Length: 157
Image (cartoon, rainbow, N blue to C red; front, side, top):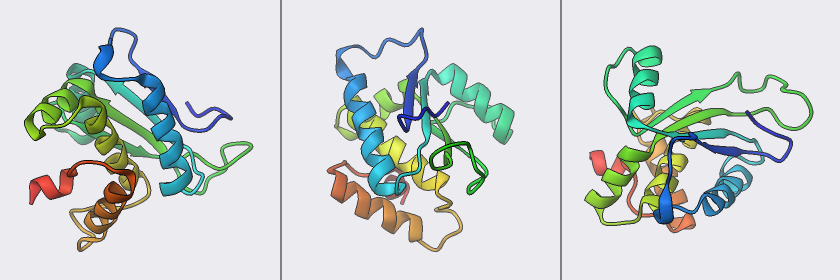
């Protein structure tokens, strides 16, 4: 899904984010994540429905429920043609992002950014369940630098 232009964001055609989300702003944010967090390595992000995230979660993780973000790392280091190799793909549930934004008192657009950062850190090899807090510290540091609200790992603690 990556183009020579770098990271991409795809909104499922049936999904209409409305005024609460500016696709152009999210694309700019993805470009910033690519440059600063991923050190120039592109990634792709699908923003879709709970239905699709549930299907992906069931198919790839054996868990039959919708989730907020899924990360699908590529073969890191494998050449993907000209330019840096893609880190992989993210899938984000727009409905989960909207509900979580309301629950935590910030915008849906900010929640999508939080989920993109969290998923990207997973694409880069972090795993908050097994890394002794390294991902939590990295997420906290990047959230502060990027001006994002509280992240997924801190919410779970």
